[in-house]
Length: 350
Image (cartoon, rainbow, N blue to C red; front, side):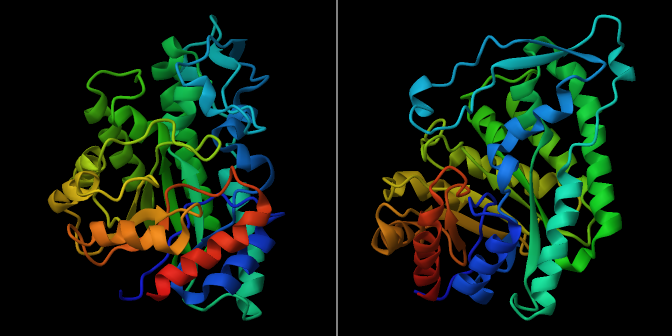
């Protein structure tokens, strides 16, 4: 097999950004062209971290969540409370058009992490051509989880507006040729696949329209890509994709609709799926030449052998793809990160 490019989806449960940068650079070298900061500390909670935007907000009320319809077994034993127990809604005396979101914190974290990235690069610890990856959930993920269902469509514009300001803050502060921006799409992909409700009609059209808007919001001279995701509770997807048809459908819509380059799209592959039925929709994938496809084929449970088995099937339907895990590393013990990166290196080497 030829050498493969490696993609890391985002979260990596090490001590801090510096340890993530150093560990990835040492293990993977130039095979990984973009290194995330690992979303360490409080950001390992992913969208739960955004509760700081809504809690004690003068224009919002906190109400008890009625929960969602996730499978309770999916979070058992993870040691993390991933399901929301509180929702937020606009106060009765506040007009939705007057709602102002606090800073989300993504820009501040990116700027802080980049300072460490730059130091290591100047010291020769990170290769010259490697960029810093900023991984951020699309607004739909946060709104669909933290906001009361009947107020989601009302809060969404204010949150989207604040996200645009976060992008502008990053673009103003950091060199565009040294960074890349990734949209994380878990609730989006699950809803597109029909496993989650949406707060708007025509769910597939609505998801695609929102992600096209997200893509166009990133300056064209900053690399940008999408991580399609089916969740990662205790190392298991929220739902398991039946096949890649819906991922291909969404990727084709984004490829046709986004007005700037899409530099990569990542699609997950469950550990047990090495059958042709899972991969055959890739034959209908219509990405533009500048878009790199990454397949989340790597699993530490069956290592290099299992990954190559899945690659053998994927090769029948698509070529030139890079390799990745199916999701970020966030919900795993820190001591497993090094061995998992070693699997990446072995697979990428061919």
